[in-house]
Structures are given as C-alpha cells and as structure tokens.
Length: 296
Image 1 (cartoon, rainbow, N blue to C red):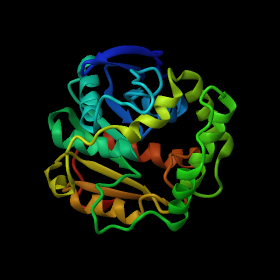
Image 2 (cartoon, one colour):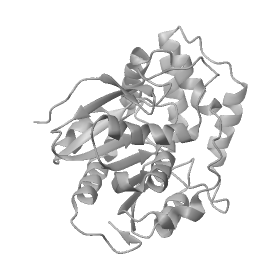
Image 3 (cartoon, helix red, strand yellow):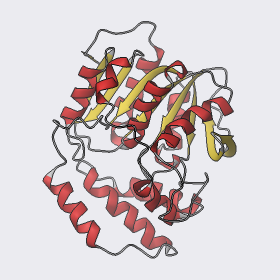
Image 4 (cartoon, rainbow, N blue to C red):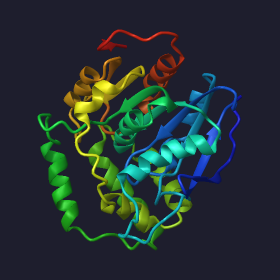
C-alpha cells in the first residue's frame, strides 16, 4: 500500500512551493510536472498511487500561481518561464533528491525538456506527454481549437468569487482539448478540487499566460543534447499539438521511444490510465536504454 504524505510547503528556488508525495522515499523518484495554469490536482491521487505501487517515490506539486504555492497578483506575475524550470530542479534539492525520472505534460513537457537541457545531471529518464518543442515546420492547432480560442478571447471572464462559475469555466475550457467522449464528470471533479485548494484562482487562470519570456529561444535544435532515455507519449486526436509534434520529438531526441495513444486528445484521461501508467512504469524501470526511435 502506497504512503501518501499529505501536502506541505517547502522553499525551492527561493519561493514557496506546495508539494505532495506518494510511496516510499527510498524508492526511485518520479517528478510530475503539469501544464499551464494547472495545479497538482490534475495529476490525480489514484494515478499517483498506481505509479507509487510500481516501486516509485512520486512527487506532484503546484507550480507558481497554482494551488497553494506562491501567488502573484492576477495578471502581474513577477517571474518567467526559466523560473518554472529552475523551480522543478530546486524542488528536488529541497526534498533531498539527487535526481528523478521526470514526467511532463503539455507545457509541463516543455519545462521537462528545458529541465533536461539545463539540469541534465538531475534526470534519470524523461517522459514527454502531449507536448512539443515548437518546431516552425510542424502542423498548427486544429481549426476547431483555433475557433475556440478566437471565441474565448472575446468572451467575458467569470466572476472569480463565484465557485460554480469558475468550475464551469475550467470544464468548458478543457472540453475542446479532449477526444470524444469527453469525461465531463471526471474533469468537473478535478476542477472542483483545484478551485477549492487554490489561494487565488484568478492568478492561477491568468498568470502563466502573462509571465515574461526569459529568452530561452527555440530549443528544438538542442534536443540532440538530451541523452537520458526518453519516452514520448502523444494522443492521436490531440487538437493543440498534432501527432507530428510527438513524432518530431521522438526523432530529435537520440534515445527516444514513441507511444501513440489512440483516441486520446490533449489530456490525461482516466480511460487511458492503464496504457499511460504501464508505459511509464516500464520506461522508468528498465535496465538498459532502448534503440533510437523505437516504439513501445
């Protein structure tokens, strides 16, 4: 039975970060990095417990301006993209972990790529889910998702003090990213937990989009520098990053494997947990590197 630590706030990279762990601290660590504007709640406890049951010490955390980590005023973040990368590295230091298997989802996958490039000694392996290095030659988002963004840009924001309205806002924001059928009940449950935990939900919803660009520049030419075993998982119905984004990552990273998740969008749906968790456990538990460009 996995041990769940309960939430605690630690000092990492000079800021307060809320973290929760699952499993035995003596087991091999897995650090989970979620995407833009998403707290640790989007790595559901049952998902973390199942990873921990595979003999891993699982770490999930709230990035800046989400959950119970530090928050800046809504619309005025005082940090940049590089800080989010360094926060992940600082969290390992704060927990006394020399290195970890790093799993990143969506923009958390971008953070994970930059973590691998900027802090290579802290990685045991890399798993990239529904993410991209944003090579300019890759397909754009779907027409349907583009139309959603255009509509959302004109729509009013919710009253951030209205819990039900904010939950509805988050659920409807997740719907166009998912494959069909959309698990509305599951997403609503996560959204409710996230809203109830968050110190300032307006900051959580607004600040990652408003943070400064720290000038990392395009990093896709550097992907060949990543030498740890890498697993790329990508849904074949991802409307934000077409499957070609995942294929491009698997080609560019020297020791990478690609797992195509059928009938999955830009999400970590419960319906795909068996495939996702099994793949992560096999990837993080293997004893030798796989061949370049292989497929699980």
